[in-house]
Image (cartoon, rainbow, N blue to C red; front, side, top):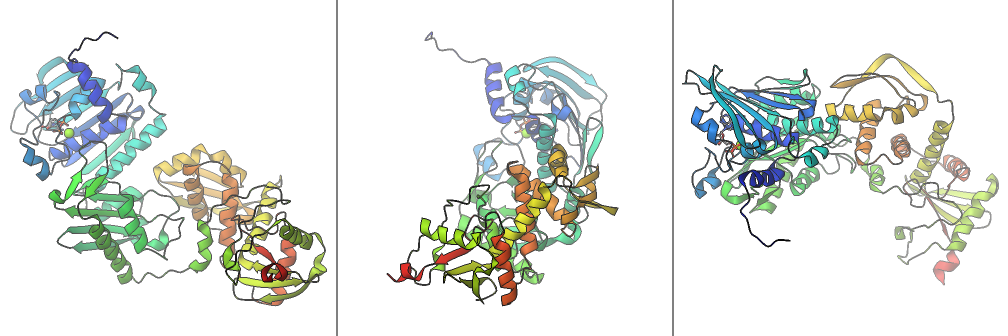
Length: 571
Ligand code: ADP
Ligand code: MG
C-alpha cells in the first residue's frame, strides 16, 4: 500500500455519508417526507415506481425554495434549520443535519422543481453524482417536487443489495405509516406503479389510525392521556381483548419522532398483564412529550433509539396511565389465564422416539421438594403401563380441575396433568386427520371477509400453498382484506381470523414446522374449555391417552404423566 495521504473528494465523502443515511428506497422516502413536513406542507404526494428503485417522487405544497437555495441545498451540511449548537437541543423540525439531500444526490439522479409562494417563477435543477447538470427558471406551483431516479446507478454493489420490490415496498409502507400517524393533520397520498396504496385525508389521530388500519379500529382503541412534570402522554392503546398474534401496530413517538423502545413496550405490556397472553402483542399509538434537555436522541438519522434521563419514572407513568385507561374501560379478562399459561412453553418435542425420552421433571410435582429425576426405570414403568390393555387402571382420583392420580393394578402411582393429557390426545387426533390424503373441506355459503394489513396479505399470498395444504381456500385478495371460501372440516368451529393471524405471525419468525405449530395452536384453542371433573371421564381420558403415539409427554415437551415410586421417595 502506498503511504500517501490524500484528502477525499467531495464525491467520495458524500457517498460514504450516503451509506449511512441512504440504505434503501425507504430511507429516501423518509428524508423527503420529513423535508416536506419541515416545509410546512399540508398536502404531500409520494409516487414510487418499482418500489422506489426506478423512481421516488415527493410533491409538497410547502414553503418552497428560491433559486439560490436550490443550488446549495444539495451541498453537505447545508440546512436552514439550525444555526448554532444550542439550536440542536430545541430542535422541533424532523431534519437538521443538512445531510439528506447531499447524500441522495450522490447516489441517484435528482430533479428538484420548486417555487416559493411570494415568487412569480420557480426553479428546476438536475443533479447527478453530486454535480449540477442543469438549472433553469420554470413555471411551477407553490411548493417542491423532488424526483429521485435510478437509485445507486453509480454504485452497482449497493444496488445489488436491494431486496425484491415486495420487500422494498413493505419498508416504504412501514416508513410512510410511521410518519403519517405522527402528522394526521397533513394529507398524504402514496402510489406505487400507478396503484393508490393510501389516500389519507387531513384529520385527527383517531381517524388517521382508522384510515390506515381499518374501520374495526373504531371500537378497538382506547384513549390514553396523562400530564406530569416529566412527561405528557397522549394517544391510544388497543383493547387488549382484541390483541393480535401479529406484531405490527406498535407505534411510540417521543416529541413526534418515531422511536423503538423495548423497555417502554414492556411497560405497556405489563399494564395489560392477565389480559393478553404471552403470544399476543399489544397495539398502541402513543406520543410522549418530554423536555428535549432530558433526552438524548441519537442524532444518527437512521437510529430510532433514544436515551431518557429518567427512564424508570417514564416507565412507571406510562404503565399506570395505560392501567388507568383499562380500568376506566372496565376491561376484564374473559379467559381463564391459568390455563393459557402453557402458551409460553417452548414446543420442541417432535417425532422423537418414545423409547428413551429425556424428561425434565417439574419438581413442583414432588410434594417433598426433593428432586425426583425420572430415570430409565421410571420411564419404563410408564411404557409398561401404556403397553398393556385398558384394564390396568385400578383406581382414579380427581385432585382438582387440572390434576389427577391413577393407580394401576401393579400399584404404580401416577400423577396426571389432565389438561396436558387432553392436549396430547387432541393434537394427535388433528394431526392424523390432516395427514390423511383426502382432507375434508367445508365450503362456506357466504365467504368470510378477514381484514389484514397490506404486508400481512403479501406474506400470506407468498405462502398460500402452505396454507392450502391445511384445507383453507382463499377466494380473493385485496390490499386490505381476503375472502375465505373454504375452511378445513375439522376447524370449522375455529375462528378463521385468529388462525390466519397466527399463521402470518409464525411465518414472520420461521416457516419451519408451520403446520405443526398451527395444529398446536388449534389444540390449545380446543383445550381452553376442557373439563374433566368426574372419575369416569378421567378414566376415559387415561385410556385415550394410552392410545397416543407419545402418551406421556404433553405437546409442550413436558410430561403429562409422572410415575411415582414410593420406595424411591422414602429411601
Ligand atoms: P435538513 O433537513 O437536515 O436541513 P436536507 O439535506 O434534508 O437537510 O435539506 C437541506 C435544506 O433544503 C433544508 O434545510 C431546507 O432548507 C431545504 N429543503 C429540503 N427539502 C425541502 C422542501 N421540500 N421544501 C422546502 N425546502 C426544502
Ligand atoms: Mg432533511
